[in-house]
Every structure is written in structure tokens, then in C-alpha cells.
Image 1 (cartoon, rainbow, N blue to C red):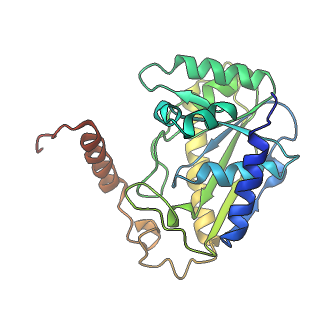
Image 2: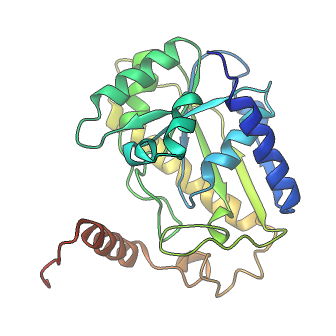
Length: 254
């Protein structure tokens, strides 16, 4: 794929991160395959996760990442043409087979495809239940499934909060060794292994995060780690209310 648009966008993103003084710390770069198709299964804490993950992989042989993203992003009159020109893959949640096939085709062509298996941002900042699509496409295309965790971007822009472009915010990206998903292995079992890996990685990243002390009592730190973020149960309720608000429906009280 020719990337006349994508590569200049990467340079703009690199400049923006530098000018904002974001302290981007990447661990496990050697676990990213330098060639061939690969599925990245990424946790989701902010609207900027794709920027930090994309910049991380770009350091590995200047490879570019094709992200699966909601169809509504591609329908935007300004952002949509840019997303399509960068080779990202639109996902229609009502009919996801087309996105799945496009992702598998891209993987077989040697592309890097990134999936957020939680399907939406975790408002509790701990991994939500995972969909099995990442495991299924990795197995069908015969490529590695690489767990990736990004952390810190929620301090800049996340669900339910306005963007806050503060300077010198630390952002961590951790890459774990690949999971090899065999064609005969149950995708649900592979997804279970992935869920355990991502949860452990998030715990590890939080423990090593540079502003760990400052995060005590902070809204961007999970409740289980001493922050004031919603619990997973509270976050699920907030997500349902947000969906109801977007659809214009008033949900009955339980």
C-alpha cells in the first residue's frame, strides 16, 4: 500500500507529541514483528491510544498500523477522507463481517492491524470484557496476536471528559510477546488468555507509572489502584447512560 498521506501524518503526530512534552515511554519494542502480518490487541483508555500505539510501532522499522475504527469516524466529512486515505478499516457494528474480511485480507498482505477488543473506552481504566475478533482474525490469517497496553492518555482525553492538553504527561506503551493462536484452538480460549495477559500488563504498567504517587486519589487512576475512577460496575452504568443519551431514548429505572 502506498502511504502518501499516512507518513506525513505520522510526522505531524511526532511533532505534536514533542511540542506537548509528552513523555512517551515504550517497553517491549522487540516483541513487535519487523515484517509480516500481525494483529495488535490493544487496551482502550483514551481517544489518543491509536496515536501512541502507532508511534510505538513506527519506531520498529517505520511500520504503519491499520486500525479498526467505528464507521461514524469515517462518516465525518473532514476526518473520514483522512482515515480512508491512511488505510484504516471502518467497522459497522450492525454488520461487522465486512470489516473482519478486510482485516484478514490486510493481514495476509503483510499489514499490521490493530484492534481494540474491548470495543469501547474503559471508563474504569481496567480492561473490559473482550470480543473474540482479534483472536479469530489472527488464527485465520496465520499471524501473531500481540498484546499491547497503553496508559496515561486518559489524562489528556477520554470518554466522558473534555480534552485536557496538559504538558509533560507521561504516557506508557508496553508490548508483550506474541500469542500464537492456532487454527484449531477455540477463539474464546485464546481471548481468555489475551484477557489475562492484558489485565496483568495494565497492573504492571500502573505499578511502574512515573506519576504513581500523584495518582493516589486521582480521577484517572483505577479504584483498585487507589484512584477515584469508577469501578467496572459503575463504569458499565455510565456507558449505558451515555448510549441512551446518544440514541435519544430514556431508559426506564431498574
